[in-house]
Image 1 (cartoon, rainbow, N blue to C red):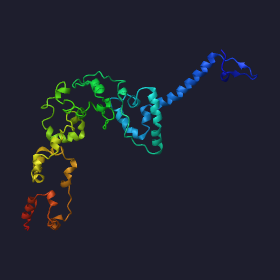
Image 2: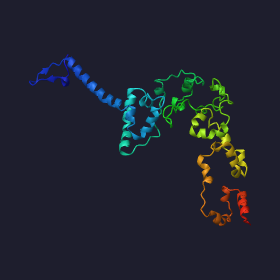
Image 3: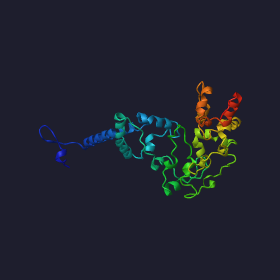
Image 4: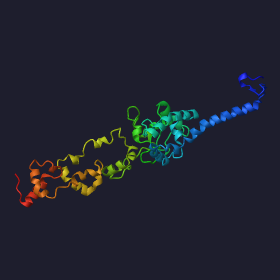
Length: 321
């Protein structure tokens, strides 16, 4: 077989030189190898968590990832769809992020790609019918294929939890997206293998002292109580009966002394008390306050009851009009 003219090799005299096929194959293989290396190596080297954390906005997500149950899973396993072509496409699109990091001061994008189902299914199966603990009935395939859900719709707190600790199972708020008693049933037995005994689930002082616990880790409460269901609002939308007494601000001290401040912290932040209890009056306030109080005294009554003034005035022999 004769080579086409553009592929022929000639010596100095102009005669065509016969080139063996194996040389052509070796040269072609070398070009292919160099081409693959030129593409694959940069992709592989820029696909590690350490490389991702070179961008300062990625340090916190990396720290959270390291402490999570997925701390041994590479970033691209979740955030890039499977396949080398998808990885290459992602790298091309990432050049804008590198440019922004160097020249404009990068910020975390609000539309960071959530893991797709294809990414999750590289390790996990849709055939699971119950939770890992065996206490929740959850037919995963039905939820994903029939309801069109993504794994990340429910398991959003697996890795990058704000406190850097494993997020555990999805909270009840996630279930209430559908299981609201209308779109899907919400009876306890629908999902719970053994419905929880509500009389034993909390300590006896849970109502009085739940506020501080809820502020420190609301996720624990939301595993059973859904905010979307209005559970919290049933109480928190109106003050308790004790607060509806017009003298409550003046008499609440008795309950605080009997039960402790934690009973207050179910609704109030810890600095709420300081608004009254740490008010600093001027040094000569006893002598100068009458002029201020004669304007009506309403600011005084934010903290002091009318009886407070009367007791002091009576003891000092002061008469008021």
